[in-house]
Length: 302
Image (cartoon, rainbow, N blue to C red; front, side):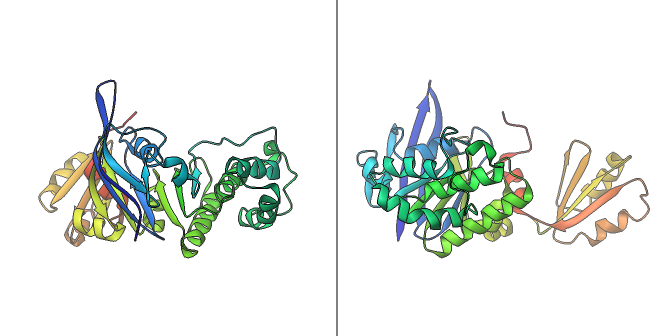
């Protein structure tokens, strides 16, 4: 059963179409990823689905409610984790949760009853009286996640939830997100971390220049769009070696001073590196990041 559907979404700003006919279908209880380079239209798509801005064309249904016409009713059952920290620094940890709960019309008694479980979920048990300034970056992100759960939402929209976190904090957030899907909650996630999407998402869509250009499970997208083995080669003299690699592999790319070789079997190519003492290499399996770069390009987006 779908909890979010969108058909033919379009949105333009100053004559530039930033969302161009997007179609989405998110099932209950899944983690659905929306990936794309900067400016691809991901955040605008989320804002459209939440009813925060109106589409120029298209239809949206969120938790059975037409959006934007009944967006307020739908958002009563939605949680949002924004990309940037917007906790109130003048309030304590607990006060941030209480104030947010009041936005949903929750009684103080109801919020207080949920408080211990929310703080435990965030790894902040016993820190309810702490000021926001005393929290680490990871603690703040976990608190924002707990805050998004204060109204016990059915679906959470998460815009780059682990940006700026160290690996330990990121892995802890991932564990919390997996726990939420195991409880039956639906997650809609945007991220620039391909490993994050590959680990967490049952399905995902890759977006570029306002359009969905690929959709499926991470493993299915890798199998469909990329060769299974990758060599990354760099070092003095890589240009001459690259010419040899081009005759042996179906696809060879260069980014800076690194050569990327994609193939079904890299054994013949590895043999050519035996006498190349100045070249260093990494042999690995293809990943979602390889798919992303193939479909959206390696050029920097600002």
